[in-house]
Image (cartoon, helix red, strand yellow):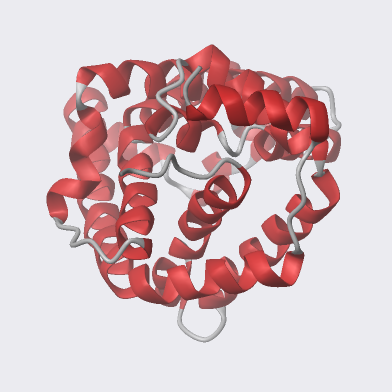
Length: 253
């Protein structure tokens, strides 16, 4: 058995122990190393993606239709058609799947920073290689499809808060999926299953770390909203440090 399999067997039998303060300090130290570079990449990528989507919408629907769709009165929930909801949901799922390797690149950057290794723009695109892209796409598709389906169904049923709560729970228990794929070389289904099994062993500490990290990530909204682009990397540091503290890496001789 490899390192991941041995560690997972041990976790299933004996669980694991992590201390909130120790792990949070590690997350913060890692975040400080990646904040500026990752923030700049998020900023540039956000602008590029925004304009790319806008241009595609204009090319497909035409400027008049897009302008009409973006009018405030047409964005109210009661005025949105079911066809649009289906189209939007499908587009959101596909978009999330396509950028999942990019998210993995940020987590790899956190790994490089922790090990005092250089990271470059190419680091963010490293996991678009087919062997990783396939598993990341499948895992993200399954999780996002489930979240979107539940959220949309409960929104239409008039219970949006319940839908939000359920999707938050699903996202929480699957938060180690991407690290398990890129570091543990797990396939999509194994990564999802093992993430749920790991988080279930100590949910209270991990949910506390996740909640505090999320709050740290949205601190950038205070004052000048662009600051959030430079606090979002706190989440990538969380993913990496949790994997490191719980699973760890095989020592190289």
